[in-house]
Image (cartoon, rainbow, N blue to C red; front, side, top):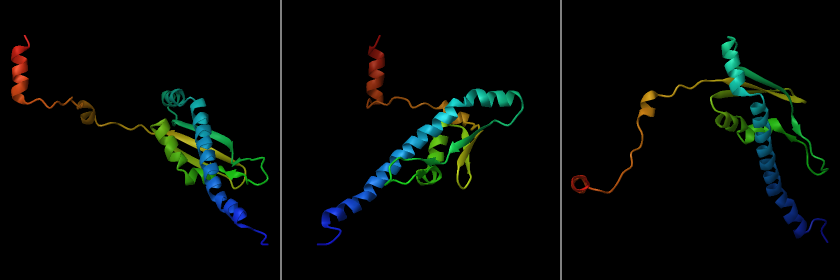
Length: 151
């Protein structure tokens, strides 16, 4: 009788999917965690105050633990820096927060620090002038007839 049977083999191969699902869940939790750090810093007030005082509009968020610790002997601690790279968390945060550029600095072992810089994006005023008008299937003749008979 073999040491690893068919049932064991299926369990081992299923670990790939379970691991991917677990890392996706960790990435979502990391996104929420980093988003909360930035929101807690009060970016609107902080950036406005910095501009008022003629300082660079930057928020530094230091000392974020680098690893998601697990109490499960079978699961390794998850490296947040790898999650940020794999799941484009920085780009997602920039889109979620808006008008910011985020850079991540990390040491080899212990902590991550984020630098959130305000980057104003000026919209093209010509694009904002045009609104989508409602369209109908009504012909010009039907419309003029409706206008003539409406009063």
